[in-house]
Every structure is written in structure tokens, then in C-alpha cells.
Length: 277
Image 1 (cartoon, helix red, strand yellow):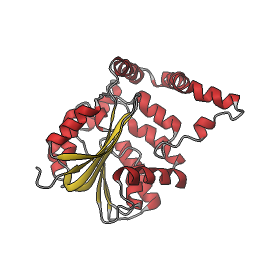
Image 2 (cartoon, helix red, strand yellow):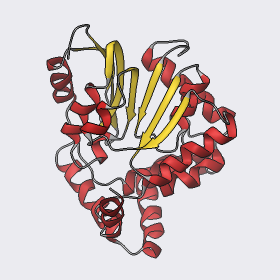
Image 3 (cartoon, rainbow, N blue to C red):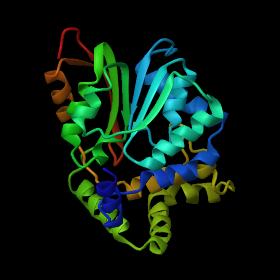
């Protein structure tokens, strides 16, 4: 697994998500944690996760594993990227040192044998992850098999925007193949291309960079989210109806849906009916 993972990063076929999240850790504070917790309780429609088994499949920075643990869940964090595993371990060290109810390990959403050994969970959470595996539909099916009866799965997948999505796939591939010194200038150009309107408005209102300071999406930071977006490769997309069809065919009922009309993610929460395989 190490050889394949590192080789894909070296060849520009995979983005080093964990290195980006390591830089994000310094900005985690109580405000960001509260935002992360609120995004979980809102979508899962649970005020607390006390007594709940929670799988963070593709834990990234570890922020949402930490949020789930603070909400009372028994947490199992998994990520393919060793730097992401290190991020989660660092947050555990800071907030829950020695906690036996938070397990962190390296693993792949595509390794079915490994996943079967994890058992089933009351909540499976995989936000913005499975479309970066290189085999999104297989990863979505694998994740479905990890949900306990009447359990929930909360996933987000990039919205299929046709030619716009194809164009972004090309941009991401170019970015990952650039020499590292050339990536920050590309990040800045794309940042300005995406945010020039609100940044200009900030200037006109004499509130420079207010958009950056007030960024409130799920407790993340605007720059780390941008780098994650620009670099995020492999890159796959789906229409909401295709995700709905896949999970309904596997015995799930949709309970919450947030769609977007942009390059962002559609968010889904499904509940698994009892007695389904």
C-alpha cells in the first residue's frame, strides 16, 4: 500500500491531502470545533452522539473525528494517507490523550477485506472523501456495507457539472504534476479567480479580507479548503439521482439532502433499513 500511495503522489496521480491538513491543525480552536459539531448534529438530526459508534472513513484532518468524540461517540478514524492519520493522532493527543474509545488507524475505503474486519457502525461518516479514491462507485458500495441496521451514513460527493467538472479535472491534474515551487502561484491565481467578487466587495465596504476571516464552512479554513479543492485528485463526480439510486437499491432511505448548483458537494444522509445485507 505504501509503495502505491507514495508512487501515485510522486507521479502526480494523487494529491497529498494529509500534508495540507497538517498545516490546518494550527488553526483549530473552539469556534471551529463548534462549527464542526453543529454540522454533524444538524445533518444527522441528533443533539448528541452519546453511546453511538462512529466511523470516520477518510478522516483527513481529524476534525470531525474529534467533533464526534466530543459529542459522545465511540470513534474509529481511518485514512489511507499516513499524514492524515498523524493529524488525527495529534488531535487525540491534544484533546483526548489515552482515550480507549477513539481508535485511529491507516486503511483504505477500497480494501473490502480490511473494511469487513471493522464491523458495522451506527454512523458512517465520509465527507468529501470517496470521490478521491480513484474508484468512487466501489468505495460508495463498500461504505454502505459498514452501516448497522437503522444506522446512518453521511456522505458528500462532488456535484456533476458536465464540462465544468471535466475542466476542473484537467486543472487538478496539471496542478499535481507541477513542481512544488510552482503550485503556490497557481493556488493564488485560482483563489483570486474564485473569490474576486467578495474580496472586491470587502474592499469597497472598507473591510478588507472580511471574506477570509469570516469563512464558516464546517469549521474549515478558506485557504486550506481551497488547496484541498485545487489539489484534490483523483477526482470523480456524480449526479444526486445516481447516489440516491445506488443506496436505495442497497436498502437505504434518504433522510437528509443538501444539493448545490456549483462545483461543491451534494450532501446525503441515509438510514439503513433493518434486515438488509
